[in-house]
Length: 290
Image 1: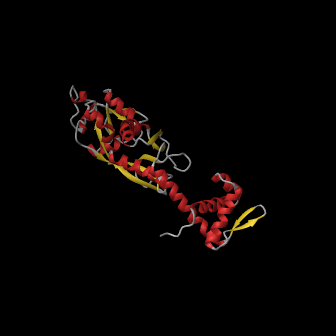
Image 2: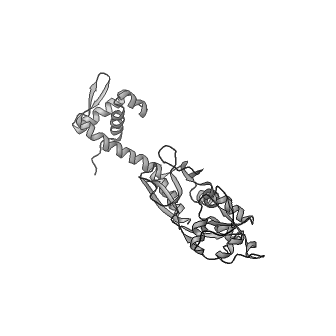
Image 3: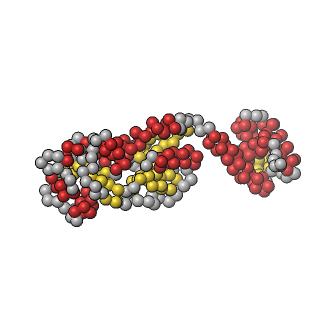
């Protein structure tokens, strides 16, 4: 059997040790100042040590009190965290993602998350700005790039780094049907902010330069994909961003050649997140979707 002092006495000491004041501890605990002082005296009597020096304008911890307070505070923190994790009502996890990733991959899946975890709300910050996790309230970020992303951050691969060519199925027929990388010279290349067409063409054809090639530039990948759906040209993208479009025949992959790049998609979070339990749940769910 554990030899543990009464919980009220421990709570009174822990609160008094943080405030170094019986009155403030009493206000926090919702009891009288006399009750807090009595609980502390009872604890001191039980432990046979003096925990505080009573000062004219407050309290001062003794050496024994200073040793006792930190582990006791950690124990109360663990109890509070365990209780919160047991029933995470109205819990919110903020995810940072680029507008393209949010629109084409994350948002269509959030309904499934809500059905599986009704007590956890997702707040989505769709922005190209990088999260710093320290003062922006971000819990998880989806980043495209190559880890490491910074000290104190953990990055788990979401899906591979392969990129493919996609276009509307109408471009497979007509005067210049697309059946191989060489056929791209007859069509408009839809370029996004990542600028990967030169690398793709060099890998596919041995030359990144194509005479008289036409391009159309967009600031976001999702806009380039939308242009491809509208028959404006051919786009480069990670297959995961166009799974539904390929399945519904809004887009097609005209040839099988693909390119491995060093810019994959990763689930990034602090090594020590604000709420480890919730971040673990959401991070695991994200990885299962890939």
